[in-house]
Image (cartoon, rainbow, N blue to C red; front, side, top):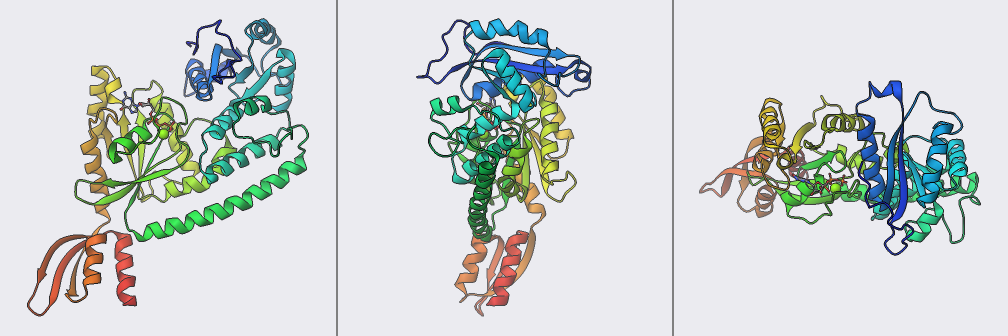
Length: 442
Ligand SMILES: Nc1nc2c(ncn2[C@@H]2O[C@H](COP(=O)(O)OP(=O)(O)OP(=O)(O)O)[C@@H](O)[C@H]2O)c(=O)[nH]1
Ligand SMILES: [Mg+2]
């Protein structure tokens, strides 16, 4: 693993916000063989997570263990080995990429005289920095509080304060240590209530959007797969796309024009990651449920990533957890992205593989390759549910005719001399339903 900055670079640079960190990925040796990823790949990902909140990685290593130690997770020898490195390297935080119990955390902090955070804590930090909308902030705070309640140890308060960041810790001057279980519990209840309100409002918005019968295409995928880049290219939007884990947190929607002239709504969402903290999955359920209601789920893969397969499996797992079954009626399409990053031969393999797997396209969101095919595929899948109906409408009923043009695809039209328009119109199921209730009402 290459450290993010040259060693010797002075830490504690409050101005840039970069803090010196040490990243460890402890793993049980006999489990490593059957794991989806190598310990080195896991370590690399942990470093990516640490960099996502601006940590300056002075040292990173995978730590093999024959078995985890209940009191300290890693063995005494390793703790002693690392101690001078931490002290001389002015390490401000040690990231332990594993689930660390409160007791282990406390013991490690004591032994190393520095702050220790685990994988969940780190991911929560990232989400805390990224959340922009009120709902996102409430969701992250909720996840953070449930996490804290489960451990009730000192949180990463000084970093949060220096960053002037999220301020999970309630009122000014209040420290994690003073905030007991009951207070956290009260705050959780309060946030849940607020969240319900926000979700209800959004539900109303969603329903009114549903009245515009555009089908929804939701992008899902492992963090950094290229969802936002694809979103931007397809809709000419400017959502932050960065080589940063969890660049996107809040869902964004834009109109998407398809080759048939049909319109859809494209939705960009938060990325997934292996071992996504369950507190976060729970907190983001409402946001993700919106994804689940989409007419098409477009799973974006980073085909250039060595762990592309393992990442895809993780995404499928989260989708499954959220209740999306592969065999459900909803269409899941696969976009194998970043073709341009692959060496010629490997890219050709992906290009050849894609057409043999149903609903799969090889693309480059940056370079544009494969995007016309992708749009055609979306178009084709959306038209499967579409019904073409023959309608006779009084020419005097301009509102209905206008409605049909707006919400359906008028395939043919013939106005006769008695003042009737004979229309052949393609309607999506939702538009058809609305048309029927509209006619019944009228
Ligand atoms: N070479 C190449 N790079 C790409 C392509 N698509 C995306 N990237 C790069 O991959 C990085 C991540 O892209 P994003 O679009 O932010 O990924 P994301 O899936 O939205 O990530 P999160 O929001 O963090 O979940 C950026 O540096 C992009 O420029 C591609 O087709 N080719
Ligand atoms: Mg994104």
